[in-house]
Image 1 (cartoon, protein in one colour):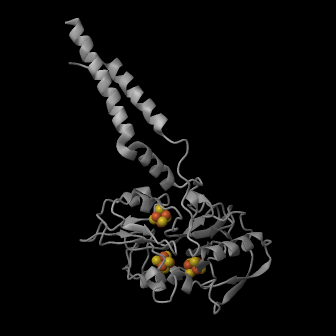
Image 2 (cartoon, helix red, strand yellow):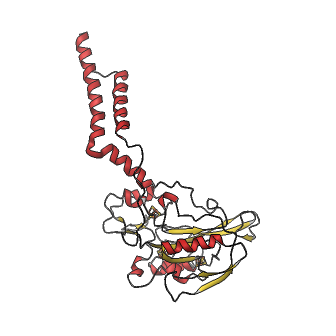
Image 3 (cartoon, helix red, strand yellow):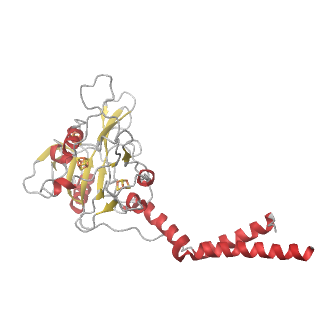
Length: 321
Ligand code: SF4
Ligand code: SF4
Ligand code: SF4
């Protein structure tokens, strides 16, 4: 018995045609954000690069210092890692003299988990070690359940989850929006210490309103910028001149939205933020999986088509003998 290349290709083509016929025309809709979702608003134009948020994050999450210089005097991480959940990166161009200007300027960008509304890391985790809280939308991680497959590391469109390669019992490392502090009536440590309100905590709905207000400000206009937690009455504020904001709230639409929103005056791609579609990666991949493996109908149809081609070829062989 043999299957010649032509019959194999015919069978495969029939199977692919059946798969295509079974595939729905569109991916499932993006998941939506819970009404009580909380998050962060990071405003690059208010950030002064003091890195108080980086230290506070380490302290709040019991993370060790990380050294990038020969002298081990102080914590100096260059990126998020198994030991660092939050970092402030700097953009610099030309002379680097002017804050929040693309040319001959500089600007800051906070790098940490964005708490996607429809997160890929949750979608791909085979054991549900990554979960999205249905009430506040925080994307959390359970080290007791994790099997170390690192699918989440590969799936995250922002490159956030990191694996602790250098520890005897490695885990995935990523910001969990200080959920342990929320349980104690506190809020994100990075927002608590930020002196200018560049990192602001609160309900995403209210953060979004504040982001829209800022984008509508005229460049140079004096304004009050809330600090800490936008939803608490004891908050203080920071008075400053508004920068020339880009008319964009990053995270409003990217991959179906994120619970961390960002504002800037320098284009986001220059600040290291990827340009992404509005359709979530999770919705696309889950639709493909369900199409291909839903009831195993399509794979069985594919196998059937190949079997038919093989059998027909055997009959032809027998006829020729
Ligand atoms: S604490 Fe605030 S101002 Fe300082 S680096 Fe962090 S975000 Fe920027
Ligand atoms: S940014 Fe990455 S790690 Fe964070 S929720 Fe989104 S997919 Fe998950
Ligand atoms: S919310 Fe907490 S864990 Fe996340 S970056 Fe801020 S301080 Fe770090």
